[in-house]
Structure formats: structure tokens, C-alpha cells
Length: 182
Image (cartoon, rainbow, N blue to C red):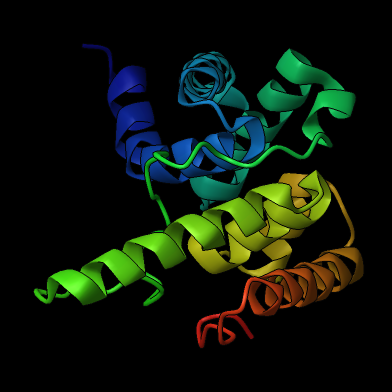
């Protein structure tokens, strides 16, 4: 294995889950997300010599986002379609879903997780992506701005709007607003 490949793997592979999470939220179908992440990793490896900086995550997620836009176009990215009822839950560790040994509580949490996923997936793409990057990937506003190519003020505005839409959708579904959403 070459030194370049070793360095790439050491820096990029820790962010593979984040890359998949973003691709999954942008593309929705898991197979499309798999294709996007695979293409993004190939592009990142090819361009690895051009990477300058100390934070690989925003750079890699920018490539994931660009691969999605290239593969599916901006029009498709704005479509709103909820996930099927049996879709996998990938909310990350945000305290929104709690492992509970009580079967009834477990069913309620699973249903709430599905509702939350459906609400997030109905958000317009520009709001959904900043919400995923901030709340699920815990990225800074500056890093989100780097990924999306938007000014920090726009990132902050989109995030505030995404949170408001999420809260509105959650309350509209008859749920109490989750504590993890500001």
C-alpha cells in the first residue's frame, strides 16, 4: 500500500459515516447514497494531493454534496418525498431516540423516530443539508459554509429556518418539541 493511500485512509475513513449520513439525507434511497459516497471517495482520493488544511471533514463532505448535485441535479434535490415506513433510522446519537428495555416505550420511540425522519426528509434540500451537518454531524457554521458554499450568515439563516420548520412539523404531528432541536 502506498504512503499516499495510507495517509488518505487515515484522514478520510474516520468521516465515512458522516459522508454516508449526508448522502443518505440528500439522496434518500440507500443505494443512491452508496453510489454517491463511493464516487465522492474516488474523487477525494484522486484530488487528495490538492487538499490543503487540517480538517478533512468539510472538504470530504463538500465532495459528497457536489457528487449528489452532479448525479441528481438541483431539481431532484428539491423534491419532497417521505421515507417508507420501514426505513432505517440513522439519527445519530442526539438523544432523540432512547434505547429502552420497556417494549411499549421502545415502540413509541421507534414511531417518533420515523416521524422525525419523515419530517426532516420533507424539508427543502438547502434546509435539510444544514440541519444534518449541524445537528447530526456537529459541524461548525464555518465548516458548513465551506461544505455548502454559502456565506456563514446564510448558513445561520437556513439553520434557523430548518429548525423552525422541523419544530412546526413535529408539533403538527402532535408531538412535543424535541429537546435536541434548538
